[in-house]
Length: 231
Image (tube, rainbow, N blue to C red):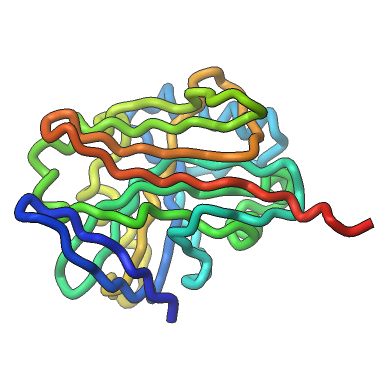
């Protein structure tokens, strides 16, 4: 079982949090604004990705495929990150992180579910208690940047008001789990369309979940290393 050693940022201070990952799912096409959902679908269609008949969707991901590290090794240059909020459920409590569903786009063109198993999901090393941000949830801002050469390009930006709420995503996931057991579950929220409408491949990816009321942020940052050292 994969164990994440995280930092819990509470109003009263910080403390360590050990989280045992039993199950993990990635949601998709979760926008409250269906026009934005259609734009994201068009981004994927341009890449040759088969789109689902019904949305939202849910994909199971192997529970060991999660990391809070700062380096991903990939076997193809056509991989990219996606900014997402992350829900972690343990012993009746829910925590909020920020992360990236890093995806091999070439493989995604033939099988989305198989593509989800190639690159790890990345999650922030720090999380918030959900109850402490519940009241300002829709005002939280999700952003991502792509590192391409010497450029840091703003790639995605939205308030969480544009994505299904945490409660709605939780209800959706619960409705899809046969035994309804969510203890040890990690849920990736699904992403939003890129600001420029195009998928950008790069050597690094950053995601921020910002709470403007508290002027506090969670961060997920990593480099992407192509395994090209063989002749």
